[in-house]
Length: 486
Image (cartoon, rainbow, N blue to C red):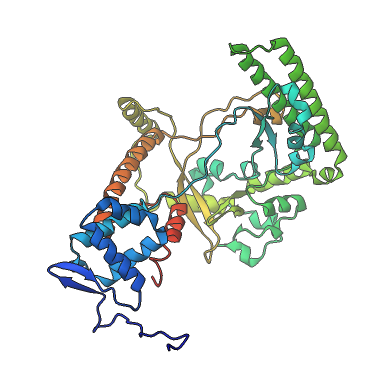
């Protein structure tokens, strides 16, 4: 009889006296005796035997096993067999396994639905549009016959600019820097924000993220909300945004119907039905908006806040904080200009003997020669406060701003936002930078493909190419077995 719960033969572990492989006539043979990793060793030996014969059978067995198990086998071969002893069959097997695992950095992405052709563009801010409950109204099936479609249009959210758009003034301050601003006149920053503490001062000037020094409660709350906060629209502005979106959608449907040659629906009938649909949706949204009492509590005293913000921007530079761009910094404008002036005249930069016009002309000739778009604009330097430093310092960055005059659309603020084009600041070197970047991306792709071939053959990499953190995390997860104790 054999005792229950005990192994009949003791486990054989790898030791100097017992190696997991043998070299017979120049070929690697894996030890298949019972013991530690016996299943792995027997699988590898079986696959090594098949690698010398029918490769299609080997490929089928490898690809039928799980990716985790294949990585485990690859790890065992790497750790147990010295590289100098690898023969052709082992190299062929490891290459086959690596090839089945795919290219490093490949990770599944969500498949975007590109079938949405009809949408309603509506300007809104955060939760304000939710009080109208327009999405629920659009999905009311009783209104579908008026649209002559089976699916309602989708909402395309076009949010109003965040408060950083109106609060931050570091770009204008940096662009308007001149020698006249650097003088020994007394600074008024500590007299304007009298609630400051010693921790809010750097070299006697205010440089802080402490919003408790702001005496105006409404403005203080705006700063606490952060750079991405959007002020809620008034009730009539929400209805104006909804009506603009509905009318634009109806106009697009009618224009598309006029150009279509494969429809039996009368244009006059469609126009009347769309007008009725627009009226019903708009009236229901207005009823929902007026019925919600919470929305009225969200309105702000914009005039009072605007006056105090203008006072702040006259004496202070408001901008993003380094390492925490959602936060707003308050820096004495006189101190900011002094630090920016000192940086521009430090050894970090060479003073150009060319004028701005000469530099732009040289760039224009280059762009024209290479058939690139030219813009008469140069980068500028601005400072980002590094509030995590003790004492706080500046990080100076070369930025891009736009000089193009944006055509002002007549009408209200909502109308201007609704028809506003995307903001894409460019300089004279932008077109060349974009073309250079595309060429470098091509070079990186070629090098990555060559490195992948090397990895499949040799099992090591010469370099890594990462374009996003997402690919790194995915690669760590799928190679968890290989990264144990590393």
